Image 1 (cartoon, helix red, strand yellow):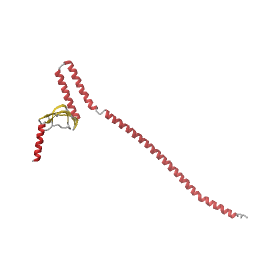
Image 2: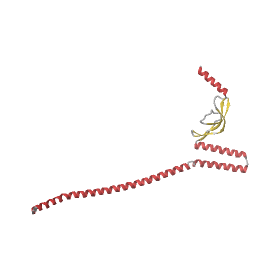
Image 3: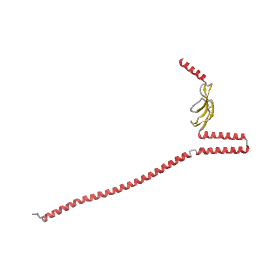
Image 4: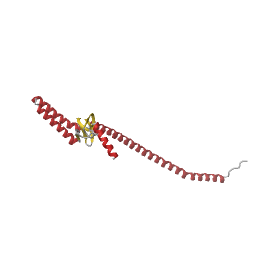
Length: 206
């Protein structure tokens, strides 16, 4: 036979169930609070992520604009690097135009010659003082392959190779050779070279 619960035992079960419910309520409240805190934290992180993404995109756009501007400025610098030089040279061309116009009316060769020579000196002075360009003399100088380009040679009475004739003047840009001078070089004659060799051998054996 099944045992029948007495009213007292039923009351005890109900009281135990109520006690269990009382114990669960704080846990549920704590879980709800934790979920709420988590949701707030997630929302905060999402907002921060969105802000950082926005900042990154702005920085990326700024960098791209900066890069494009740098390329554009570099291209302009290359294309217009000689602006000042060309401005000065335009003035020289104006002087040549005046000289030509004057010679057409006067037909005076001496005046034309003097005018062109004056323009030449003015141009050389401008290039030297303002831009550091200078010509160097080679005639009679000891041959230097760093300064001279030998296009012809000849035998002659000399102790070492020297420049006998200058065909094209050489130029320096400050301390750097811009264009080598094209020259004829006088080389020591074979007899002189043989004598020098004998003297060197005699000195080494002494």
